[in-house]
Amino acid sequence: MHRARRRCGRGIRPLFRRAAALAVAAGTALAAPPAGAAGATERARAAPVLTLYVENDSFTGSDEYYTSGVKLSWLSADLVDWGQTGWRRRFVEILPFVNRPGGQKNFGLAIGQNIYTPRDTTRANPDPADRPYAGWTYVELAFVSKTAAVSDRLSLQAGIVGPNSLARDSQRTLHRWIGTTRPMGWDYQLRNEAGVNLGFERRWRLYARALVQTLGLDLIPHLGASLGNVQTYANAGGTLRFGFNLPSDFGVQLARPGSVGGSPTDDLDPRVALDRNFSLFGFGTADGRAVARDIFLDGNTFRTSRSVSKRPFVADLGAGVGLIAGPWQLTYTQVWRTREFKAQRGRFNNFGSVTLSRAY
Image (cartoon, rainbow, N blue to C red; front, side, top):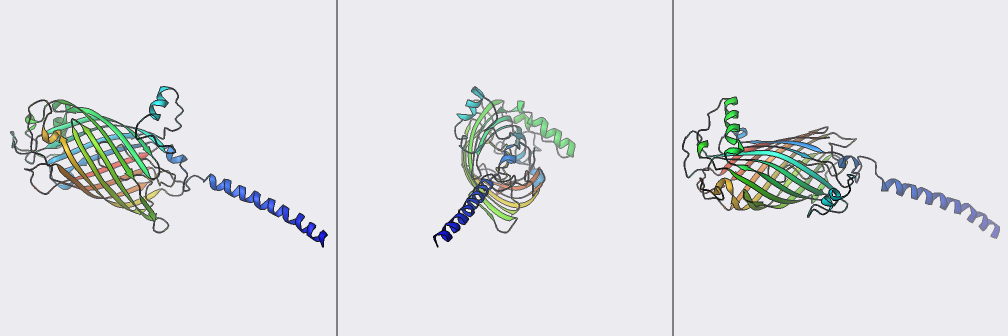
């Protein structure tokens, strides 16, 4: 009897050892997910993104108020392990808000131009009660810190308002190309003024669910602020997306402070995934702003210029569609902006926003 027990024990112990070895191997495999699996970020971290924003009210058949915005941005690959030492590495590590352990860090650059006009652009001397002509040409530096659930963006814009922004030349050239009426009142635009804007925005990807294998939805609220002599405001809002193979980023943005494109947060994003390279989705977005200063309505800071009485609260409502094919993403957003000044006609300033981006 005792011999049988000893033989049985000697037979069971090797089975336990083999089972333990298999468990260790399985745990190792789970700890290192393959590229494209949930939790993997190797391909996402190595993907910089180039984005072109084109916003224009001609998409809606109008030509007034916020009439044009063009912006070209580049967002770097992840800088957590960028291999730099000394002051350059310390500079990235000490940045406020954009330093989150375990996340990704990106550096962004952009250049852009916004154009604003009154409702009636045929008058050589515009109505003093209407929005003044104005242009804003700028460069932007941005730092981004993100995980799969939260993203912080800290941005600095510097540029020029007034004739040196070349907004008049840009609009007149475009109108000549497309054969429309030449805007006549640019002699009364805002005067030259250097502008600086510091912006911060936090976005959360709070609800991301797959309803079936490839169909899903997510909710992306945001909260931010801008401070400067060009625009000072606090804003809050959110985006709801629904579709096939949703990208693992923080949604589509308009060409405003901090918008320097969106890079993937993990390797499930169809722009970098190995097992999927297509996405089609729709989205709705809303943003409300409490405005303390808007140079395009309040006029120049230190010089006399045209101005109107602005409204302290402005909202943007948008709906759109997005398409991803391989590394390319194309989106269109239809935007309805509530009245920005008291004498403004109509309930909304409508414009369309197109973004085209490529992950490398």
